[in-house]
Length: 258
Image (cartoon, rainbow, N blue to C red; front, side):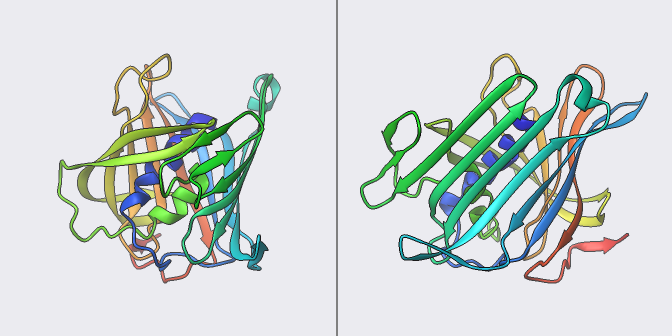
């Protein structure tokens, strides 16, 4: 589940090409997701997740910030053999949409990973629990990148074009790419939507042998909601889908029906 969340967040780091002004979301927004295994044999829910922007604008070092929280938890029988309880928090400048702080608390089976990251964008470095490292200008954590990229100007997308991606993960800055596949219409738990279809590139290794194993659908409206992400495995697919939303800044015009 953690990898699915992180890769979706990593995709959204295309924010390096986004507009400076936030037009996509507002304080109080909440998105809900389901993580599940889908095959011809069964549709099994492994967990659920939410991303929430606090109702009140907070303040960090004299800057007004959105406090954004992402959570993921295993569900049902999965708790018996691989319990997951992940929480990610980011404090994001309301003007620049640059993160000021990032907090991670990961509990997955026997795996535990905690971190606190502080950004100094003027001096271009981050300080975490484990390191102090230089960063390129405009570097974001995976949560703040998700929200910043929702303001990306998509008017000039070209099918087949690959857009470069940079994001901070575990004290390292990664550069990847996102391939635009075109427009699509999909049906998910939250309804039927007009969407933009992408393939994010991931790091090849033990988990993925194909650099483009995942397909991601984003709502084709001003909200730019993550609708569905799926990765093929040996039998079936692992998916994350949007199940609900509230507090959107705009009417979900891409929603075509239930």
